[in-house]
Image 1 (cartoon, rainbow, N blue to C red):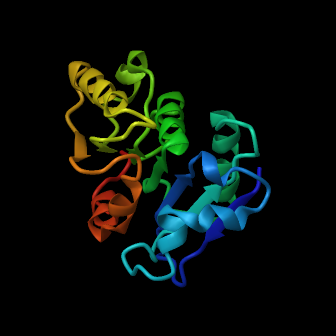
Image 2 (image 1 turned 135 degrees about the vertical axis):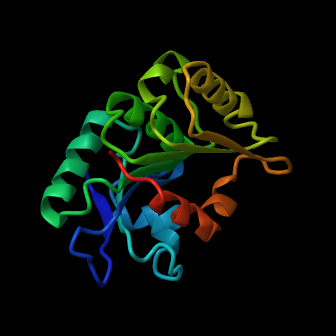
Length: 198
């Protein structure tokens, strides 16, 4: 699987934090530069809050869906090569990548320090597996491509499972593009850095 990579100019002794970003369906293909259309890959060169992170953005092949085992293997290879801080590995994605974020977190619940699914959805039956994972969940109230209910049902299931660190952020006037204001907010990356895997 191809991927796009950003490496920070300076790396602390304990290793840089790392963000895995999963794009949406429109960025599938075989040209990794396309993944820079949205999210952290688009913003990292101009946003100081993002620049301390290693950013890895896999590219899903055309006509396919995110394969969580392939993403995990790619992430493991990046971790082995670039040695980020193992306690500060973060996961996020939008739309199809939001679905991928939920699925990857549920498959490997102890790997990431926090996850940020944006306008995606998951399997509420898996909520118990990720109840201890810090989560910020973003969605537009007027989203017709992926209804808000997909995020709401996940958050409800997490809270029912006893999750203490999960927050649903709803943009009342937005449709599917809830990712632009989400990733444009430097506070998101500040929040990520408050989370460490124990």
